[in-house]
Amino acid sequence: MTLKNTILIVLLLVCFSCKKDNPVGPPIESYFGELSIFETFSHDKPVGVDFSTGEAVNFSAEFSVQADYTIDIEGRISGANYSIDQTGQNLENVFWAGNSNTIFFKQYEWCDVTLSFSGYDTVLTDSVLILGVQDFSNLGLLLTSFEDASEFSSVSGQETVTNNIISNASLSVHGTNHLEIKGEGSGTYFGATRFQFNPGTIDEQDVNEIYFNGFFKTSYPGSTVGVKLFEDQNNNNQYDQGIDEAWVLKVPLQDDGLWHKLSLNLSDLIVDVFAGNVQVDGILNPNNIIRIDVICSQQGNTFGTFGFFSDYYILTYNAAL
Image (cartoon, rainbow, N blue to C red; front, side, top):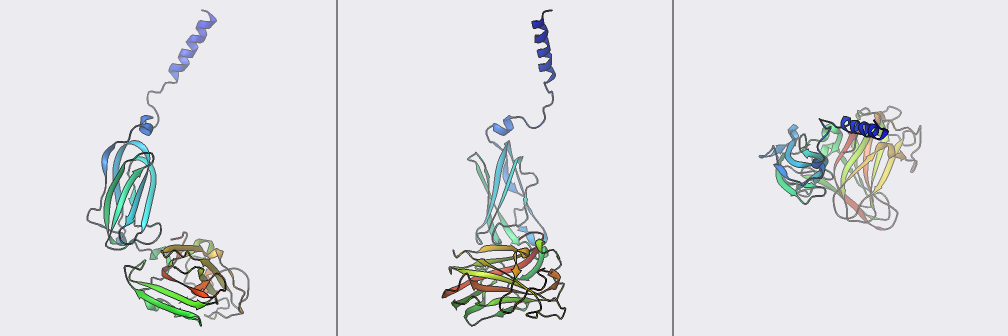
């Protein structure tokens, strides 16, 4: 047998030995074929979903190819939205538990749901009715949703114009009530909402795992919200200026007249050493926090009107709202 024939036989053996009778993974046409819908888009809550009891909306659909798809959910009243982005050939184990990207969905609100595919024109639609909204209070320490006036106190300054509760369910992010606070002048303090509690009320002790969350809306350029924490370091159940530490962070607000969710980590707050406050050890201990002020302020010290609407203040643990 010649050397040429020997090489040819070896190459043929190698080719046949590499053939797989049982290919691993889906066939290549499932990635690059045309999109066909085998099972139409639907969900398992045709009469509505009660997120407050832990229910979820389970989606279903099946299609001919592996595809990148997006499920978009939008509330008809609130304007709240939520998106689910995944890849697959069906919607097995795809669900919605009432989460939102921005503001909250509302009770008794119809939501439009669309399923779209990257690279394809196909769009499938459905709708779902919310019978009960998700309870977020178990994510940490709910400061207030402004439904119960005993949860907070309102503090006004010399330049405060308005510091009132507005009752209007269609305008509130959560429930019926929300806050309106504003002032006029060249100062930096136009009032605050104050929360007082006993040491040890905050369960999480790692400041890196604690987030302040709230919803804010303003049309006044230059408006800011300040979050200020007060510690009781000498264990006398009160904040003593010059002895205990205070921590603060001021955040500019978007002035587009729309609701926006604000989330900030407590580790971003800095020691307040102004107006008689002092630094003691420079360590924020959540166990010592006995007071939180959410302050209406401005970015500079120009004369003008500054303020915001706000709703639903909560400290969440391990993740932002």
